[in-house]
Image 1 (cartoon, rainbow, N blue to C red):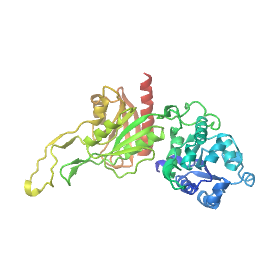
Image 2 (image 1 turned 180 degrees about the vertical axis):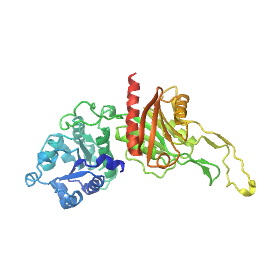
Image 3 (image 1 turned 90 degrees about the horizontal axis):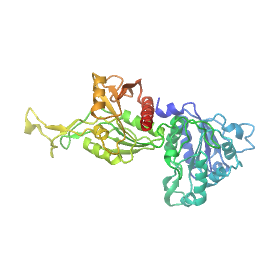
Image 4 (image 1 turned 90 degrees about the vertical axis):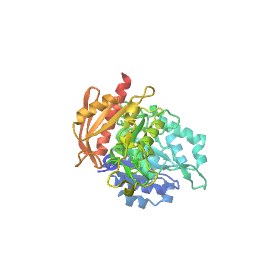
Length: 440
C-alpha cells in the first residue's frame, strides 16, 4: 500500500469547484483522490458547471454532483453535505468565492456547505495575478487564514489572461500532498502574513470558527529539517566508480513523513531512481564531498538533521583523467584510497548552530554495540540501526526494521514494516525527542 493510499483510504473529501478556467484541473485532482482510496463528494458553483460538465465529476467520483442549493436540497442538503467529512478543499477557488467565504455568505451550495462545515478546509486560489495581489483578496485570505482555513499559495506560470505570473491553481499532486499532510499530521499551511511556527493551533485546542474538528498533533510544524538519502558515488576514472546498494527509499520516505508533519524539508540525495516527494526542496549530489558541501549550505536555521544517506567511507586519492586500462596495469591494479569526511559527525560536533542530529547505522553484525559506539563518537542525539544482511529489509527493500538508541540506551524498536509507515513512526519519535530536548 502506497503512502498516499494509506493516508486517504476511506477518507471523505468534499471537493468544491468554482468558476475558474482551472476547473478542468479539478478533474485530475478528483481522480487522484479517488485512486488513493478517498470518497469524494463534488460540489460545483454555477460558474464551474458552465466550464466543466457536472456529469464528468459524477463519472469520476461515482456520486451525484451538488450544484443547486434548492434543486439538490432533498438529495444531499447543504447541512448534510460536509457531515462526517474529513476535509473539504476548494480547488480552484476564485476571488469571488474567497470573498464570499470571508463574509460568511451562503448563496450557493458550496458556500452554504462550507459555512456549516466542521472539518478542515483547504483553499487553493486560482485567478489573474492582479486579482490575487489586490489588497481586497489578500485581506480576505488573511482573514480566512486567521479563522483556521488552510491557504495554499498559487503557482506561477502561464495564466489564461496571457501573462506569466503567480495565480495558477496549485498542481493536483501538490494539493493531494497538502491534504495528506493535514490528515496525517496537521501539516503547517502557508498562512499569509503569519509566522509558520504559529500556523497551527495547539493539538489540544480546537480550531477557530468554521473548523472545530481537532487535528492530529503536528509534531514537526514549523521545523526546518535537512535529510540526506541514497548512496554516494566515488569516481575512479571517467567511466568507473565505487558506490553501494542504497536505494534512497528510507530517506525519501522520511522526507515525505517530515513534510506531512509540518516540517520544511530539504532532501540532499545521491543518485537514485526516485521521484521527489511533493513540497520538499531536493538537492542532487554524487560524491561524499559534494554531499558535505550541500549539507553545510543547508544548515542555516536547521532544527533537525537526519543523516540517512549511505555515505562512502573512502574515495580514490587520485581520479584518473583517462579510462584505466588493463593494458597498462596487467593482472593487478592498486588504487590508493583516503578517508571521506564523516558528514553526520561533522554536524553532530558543530560548536555553533548545532541542530538536533540523528544518524543511521547499517550493520551486518553486532548492531547494538556498533550503533552505541557511533552515537557517542559522532556526538549524536539519536541513531537508528538496521541490519542489511539482505532478504526482505534494508538496502533496496520496501521494508525495514529499526532499533533506535539515544544516550541512555534503546529508545524504541520499530518492527519490520513498510518504509513509508516506518518513516512516519520514526519522524514522530525524532520530533518528540527534539521538542523534549528544547524544554530541558
